[in-house]
Image (tube, helix red, strand yellow):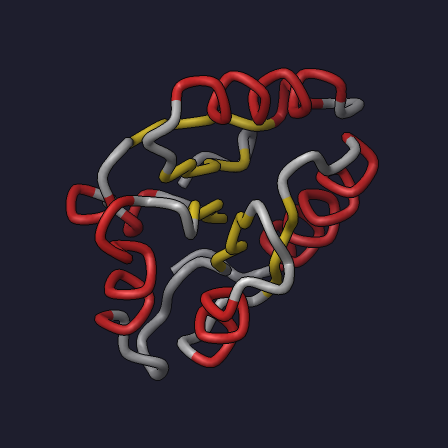
Length: 130
């Protein structure tokens, strides 16, 4: 991994939601330090290149939950933030049970996104390189 950018993987099939995410990210101070890769399909998500993953729970066929469940808890993996339209959706609790580090409801403010990214960036930058 490059020490100059935090690699953000956005797994989102809705182009409007992806555009809103990128707009919110652009509003985050120091967003130049983030490199965003978008994939619309959970089956194609390459997590090994990501430092943080934002995963839509609204993907067709519950692909997001399958992706979380196929990652073994003991393996090194980036933190996954589950994105949902409705915090009361039962998939939110299922995502946390399957290993999501955090959830974020659509319509979030850039400050909420900034807080998550800043925390992850601080943690990531102090990890020893392997």
